[in-house]
Image 1 (cartoon, helix red, strand yellow):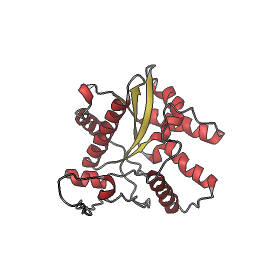
Image 2 (tube, rainbow, N blue to C red):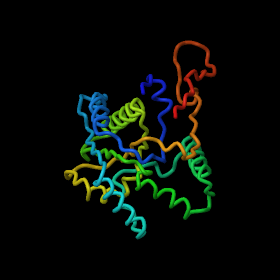
Image 3 (tube, rainbow, N blue to C red):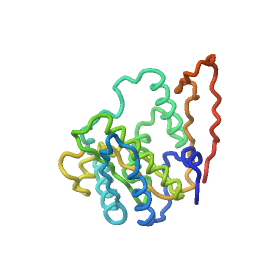
Image 4 (cartoon, rainbow, N blue to C red):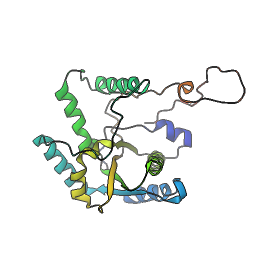
Length: 239
């Protein structure tokens, strides 16, 4: 399966339903070898990635599932996922995402237990047969955290080129101690996120979250009179 860059970008999305089909190790090695060329300031390459499959991943899912079943409190966050008070338009975008996400699952706004059950699927990697966990040295600054984002985006696009899907999950940061029990990362590393990886289960329905119009997020400074920017990207979705 070969995709051009536009198709890879537009077809990438957070998949929350994976088929019970193994991902060949050589594919993961190929993706991560190429992703090593992701940009980073002064070539620091601040990412530390761990890839789990097979029995180690099954053990992590087991331990996480036991915590969910026992109602264990989350681990203290080592970074703030969102500002405590999101201003407009970010608050509206986050609210719209939540509404679309839970509506697709038939979950109402006030059904807290159902929302919790849906969230717990994160720690089973939505059934994915492979998972990546990305760490960063806690001494690194904001620019290096941005480098992590570029690395992870590169990984996700390369996975699309291999016919695979993914789901980046900051949710794993609140089960970071459980992840560390399985991975034993060196002291001084902070878990940024996990990422579920696999072949999409096409029987799982979803609603794709839209994107803001270009003129809400991009300003062209070229001497022309201001006007609405046409969005010319091909709206492609590959199954």
